[in-house]
Image (cartoon, rainbow, N blue to C red):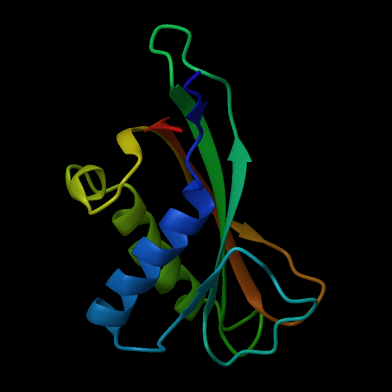
Length: 143
């Protein structure tokens, strides 16, 4: 019996975003991960992609509505928020750019379906954080 497995969207998006940021902003300009360290000390901007999953698409077997949350930490302090704003805008543009993200090698994404704007989040430690959400339609793989 064949099973359709959901994609590892977190892994795919981290790899995709890391590759584009390295080309467009320079290698090592930003760290992209699915894990956030206990404390962020900079100075390299940090982009963290978290998969929130989502419901199956009842119309199309093997497809899901999948939401991700994206945090961007950057800047020398909370007051120095321009680097976080700049990186967050760049990241949101990359993660929602159709048809590029749909046609990228190995992309499980079939549509960008919803975009949550960039929101400033107050941090306990002295750094600037921006948060956004993106919802995708994704397709699984047959095993």
